Image 1 (spheres, helix red, strand yellow):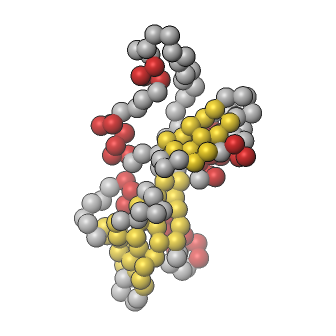
Image 2 (tube, rainbow, N blue to C red; image 1 turned 120 degrees about the vertical axis):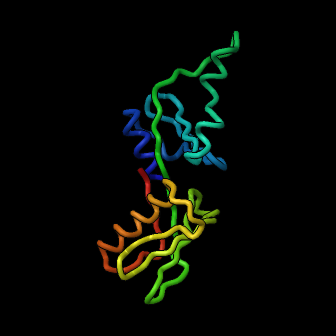
Length: 151
């Protein structure tokens, strides 16, 4: 989460006060050095379109309610992974967008470093996890035990 907060602070050209951080189920908020508040919401990429956003858009329709000022949007993609088995023919990982709920699995083929999602869904989350696993493997010549990718 620190990497995400650093990226948000840099993108908004402000410093997020770590002592003021409030973590919720799918969001985190922090006071800034400008006396404002930043809230970062976490959503799967597949939910952004159908669910839409709220806050600024909703407040625009209300009379007599203080409206938040929109300063910008930073998109970050988070993927977590954890090795669950390894042998000479396959390295298996759990992966997902939440470290507490990694519900998908992928299999790496050690001989050629190819990855396959066990559910057959070659989506952004799978690609991000498999690329990070391969990058870490290339750096250390070891299959990583766990990790995370932020972009």
